[in-house]
Image (tube, rainbow, N blue to C red; front, side, top):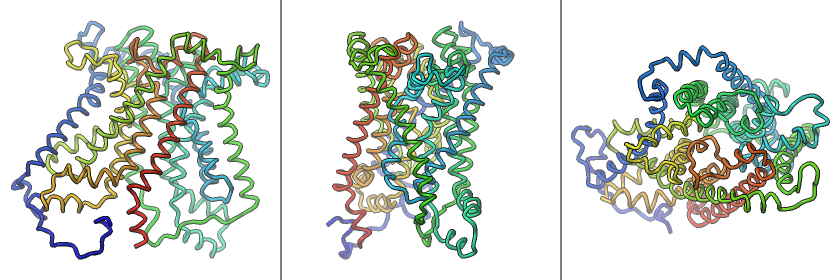
Length: 585
């Protein structure tokens, strides 16, 4: 029987060492040699975050006030660019398109989440999985699919009249598809935490259904609604792939950066536009952070879980809505997959593997897929080790208080930095030959670094949440028994947190396979990725092979999710049995 579950009398515990004794004055704490190892590891983590998170962002600020020859320009670039009407046109387009996508996505996701949590419809698990399938694909797959549906040679072009899908209409539609699952996950969580006693009291007072919805449901979910809106808006305004594929001549900030850096090689003006893109993202991030701090617990120890009542009309309406949304998701995803097998769109709809055989294999671009696979595997293996270890050093060790605040800030900072901005910062940081890290430029190693940093914040928060669920007495007792912290880490903490570590690995694998914006500036001739190749294929008019490459990415992500699900189930049986046993006791 595990020591955690044993009810036998425990041996007397040695009093806590001075380093952990309550009331100890910090200036007189004696550090153990294992503490010095923890301090050294924390310093190494801080140095890594300094180099790969803060330094690239600082380089963007520095580059924005320099001329092409490296001389100081001050705010001349800002003044010149702010005086350009085209900039404000791009800013306005980015803002209103992102706001419109948010205004469409959040109500749809809220209704879907409401149906899953407050109705008695069947097949909820299937509906939820169908609604989340956009997570398995690069964002630009939706744009490609919309072109096959509504483009100049699309199946439904005749029903469009004179309306063109290339431009804001297509961008908004594709963004709704890509951002829907992100909003849905937040809102399902928000609506799941409900105290049934509030509804019982309202029923006892004869409150109408509409009034209960407006006075109980909406106030309880308001923080989730705000967070979902901020997440969707941030995703929409910083996305590069969708406006690049289906935006046509519609200018937006993300595509402006790409044109300045790739097309004109004007890095200084590119840095200025990158900072302009950073402003709305940081504003939404600050709003979301403020909302999270003000949020109060919706469930208490006395709360009663809400169980929805059966209502034939309401359940039928919710089921109809959910299946319609799921059908649209499948239609968008399925069109890209179907088009990848069509021999010659729109003249020969017979099925063949020409786009895979001729477009990818013989075209020499299939190597990009294997590069993405290598990147995803490296991120899935390296990322969780560094992220979880750093989170453990922050949460479960002591000392170096002056450094911990910096590491915590660096851990969440990437959440407010768009991928394009981060990728541009990596160019400025790694290109100078005087930088010892210059050897990493355009290598797979740098792509691994930028991908892990881009998605670091969410993984860090997952690790911290898992660590906070473990009692701090583990480390205190280990210290009193003079057990090194790394022994406790490897034998207690890691096994207990394995589900969270596997979830971090899955998250990094999927995002490494689908990311575009963070890596579009950083690849070399031998390190081009599948997501970037999709952009290039579409740009050259090879939309069939582009759909084929996107399909390979989707199938790989789906297979990875199934494998991770099986691994999670196996780990829960082997390492998490103590949770259920504790509940039975």
